[in-house]
Every structure is written in structure tokens, then in C-alpha cells.
Image 1 (cartoon, rainbow, N blue to C red):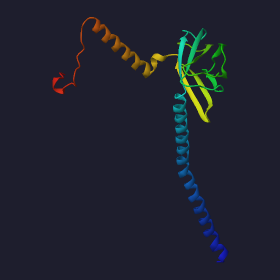
Image 2 (image 1 turned 45 degrees about the vertical axis):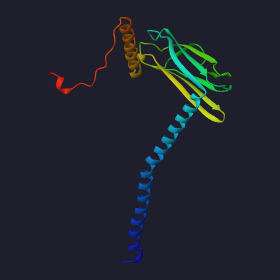
Image 3 (image 1 turned 45 degrees about the horizontal axis):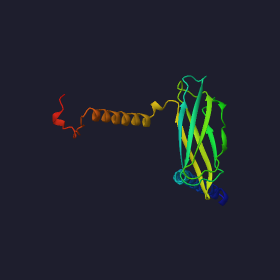
Length: 201
């Protein structure tokens, strides 16, 4: 048998092992690289939000929520500056699919604000109502003092479905209950943990 015939299988096996090794390395390292990218993006987003919170606060609410999608709903955003906020930041409303704008601007530029000044943004839309669960997002982007700003707030057409709403409603009811008892001259007593021996099945 010639040397060429002997070497040919050896070359094929070696090449296959080489390709297989680097292919495995590629796929093994891929999730790590992707995870690092996602982690980096998340940290960047969190850092941007924390930085922006030192400059301003934004709150969003359903000013007038329609019962049906063919009626008009009004969503309002209030922006309060904690320190001087230069002009140039942009805002964008992100609406539900098939929602129709009736009044207001989907995008725009935020004017310069002094500390303690506020600015309101309002939009009237159809296709966003209590009939179907949807969300409206108000986003602010740009840069201040060479630092990126990327901040958004969200509101739901069915806030009562959210866990946060349930917690707030519970806390509110407890506060009202405590006030009512105080007016009646009653005092609330704190109960310790339940003893299993006291439980009757």
C-alpha cells in the first residue's frame, strides 16, 4: 500500500478533530459572551436610570380611561426637575398595537427646566381602554453632562391586575382602618406569631 493511501485517512481524521474542537469551543463560549453582553447592557441601563433619578422624576397615570376601545382615553405624564435640566432630551410615547392618536405629539424635545420646575405631557388616544389589557410607555432619552439618559415609565389599562396595585390597595385599606379605629377611640393590638398548638383542625 502506498504512503499516500496511508496518509489520506490520517489527514481526514486530524482535520475532523481540529474542526470539531474549535466548533465545540465556539458554542461553549457563545452563551458566556452573550451573558456578558446582556449583563453589561443591564448594568448600563440601571446606571442610566440611577443617574437620571438625580436630575428628575417622572410619573405617569391614566387621567381619563375609557371603558371601550372606540372611545378616547387620556394619559398624562408629570416631569419634575430636581436640579437644572438642560434642553435637548427627547421623549417618545409608545402606544399599544392598533392604537390611534387623537391629540398630542408622539415625540418631542423637553425644554430646559430649573430646579423644582415641572412639565406635563398629555396624549389622547383610541384603542387603549379598560376593555383590553394594554400598556402605554413614556420614554426619555438623551444625554446630560456627557452621561446617557434612558428612562421610561409605564401605565396599564387594567392597573388593578398588577401586584403593585393590590399591595397599594391593601396598605391603603389598612391605613383607613387604623384611622377609623382611632376616631372611635380604639387601639390596635399587635398579635404575635401563631402557635401551632393553638390551631384546631
